[in-house]
Length: 224
Image (tube, rainbow, N blue to C red):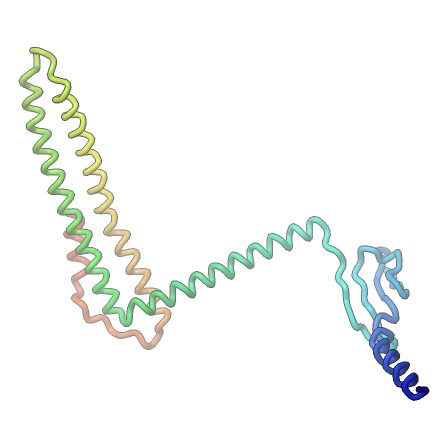
C-alpha cells in the first residue's frame, strides 16, 4: 500500500511538473517603458504585451498586446485585401487551367478566333437582311401615308404600323452596330488568350500555321 501511495504521489507530481516549469513569472514592459515581473500580470502592464517565463527564465509563451480600434480596423482591412488577393489568384489559376484544357497550340486559338469572327459575320449579314426588309416595308407604308396627305386622317392601324416599323428599324440598327463592335471584343479576347497561352507555355508553344490573313479578312468582312 505504501508503495502504491508513493507511485500515486509521483504521478501527481509529474503531471504538475509542466505547470510548475511554465508560468513561474510574468515579464512585461509597462506604458512607462519600465520592465515589470510578477506571478500574475502586473497592473502596470494591463493592455501591454507580456511574456511568461519558466523557472530558468526562458520565455515559454508570448501574448501580444490587445489591438486598438485603429489597429483592429487596419488588420481587418489587410485581412480583406489578402482574402481578395487569394480569391483573385485562385480565379486566375482556374482560368489558366481552363485555357490549357481548351487549347493545345496557338493554331487552335487562331482557328477559334476565325470561327468566332465568321459566326459574327453571319449574324451581321442576317441583321442587314432584316434591316433591308424593314426598310422596304417602311417605304410601302410611306406611300400609303402619302395617299392620305391633305385628305382624310390616315387609319389608326396604318399609323400604328408606321410607328412599329420605325421601332423595329431602330432596334435592328442598334443590334447591327453592337454586332460590328463585337469584332473588336472577339479579337481582344483571342489576343488575350494567345498572350496567356504563350506565357503559360514559354518555350513549348506550337507554331501557328493557320491562314495568316484569317483575322484580317474576317475582321474586314464583319465591319462592312
